[in-house]
Length: 363
Image 1: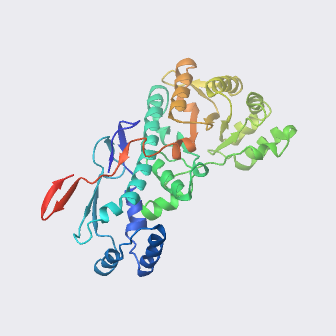
Image 2: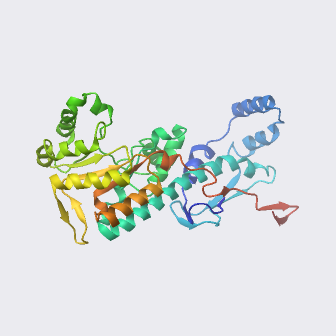
Image 3: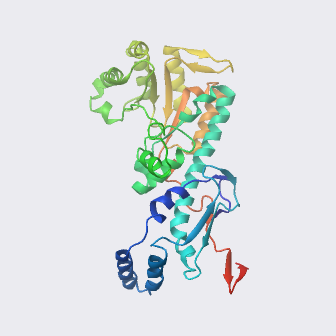
């Protein structure tokens, strides 16, 4: 299995252990063989019943293959072999090819998401090193992608792949996946924060917008806590004025950090204007690197984010506005877990050698 090139010059290997534990360590059964035969007959193909009954009898239903791979989490340049699958019983030489779809699917998807997430991590790290606090990096990219993928299983694997690099996620199904298949401690895999959605603002009515925000602060703002409030249901700039005036004391007295989320518009226009309004009301400090950091509040952008948009936002906030990257966090949904495919890194699993009459031939 190899990434033959693509958008990224390296890959972060992930996904093999999960698919082995979830599928290949469970023996096949006689009932499954019977069912598979019905499927193949209906499909118009000849079913290899003899081969599968041999595996059931001689191998207890386990597929006779040996799998070797690089360590999961390794950062490997493209055009290197990441995984090798070898047949261990010459009576069933076809099992390596049989495993291709199962193995390659898990590896290309898990590894591509992990690679995308890792690449974004390097982008954010560069700006934190220049303008802010690098220790904040593990929580700078939050996974919003559970509802943006094609299946529950994709959310599990893709969400787990993101957590190779970061510790913020709302894709909760990744937690039991990692706990069960990667022996991860479920209480320290990743974290999230209380967050409003638009309906929890608009259901109060426009005249009740401030009351909706105040209620959120009352319910969740505790000393040292972080809470996120989507604030563009009506007018993001007016909402920032509300936060900095009638709600200012509520925020400051709570001891919490308020994260304001704009969720529409051009971030290269919206964010600088937001930061200016919030600085006017909450003030800012200049850190030791000479960049401004807001008091009491932060901003998260999660609308339409991909790695290119994220890079543009960081560049504008830094170069044009001279704000520290400490002020920003990002959320990615479909751009993280769904906007990838097998061609993103030109993935393939190919037969590379075959032994015929005791002699190996390169293929």
